Length: 100
Image 1 (tube, rainbow, N blue to C red):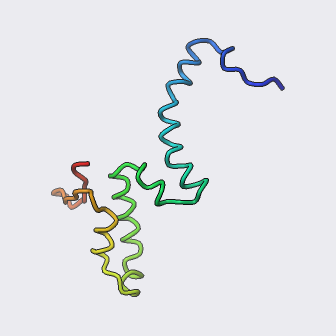
Image 2 (spheres, helix red, strand yellow; image 1 turned 60 degrees about the vertical axis):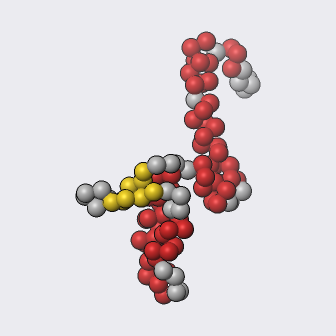
């Protein structure tokens, strides 16, 4: 089997591959600390703030009874999760992020 040599590709294919570099770099900024090092805290800042908020809300809702049983206040835990993110409820009741 021959080694892959990108310089042998047509220019348009090389350009298409090069266009994906920012996407791959963004993915690795999360994947490397999380999957390679097993450190979600280190990967967390590379996650979009709105997605962080959604994950935090999902986790909090899924664990609210366990938190209460161990003496934690779910509202306080939630505030720690999404500190620095301005949240509001829209008219339909969904919690959304505003600002950055």
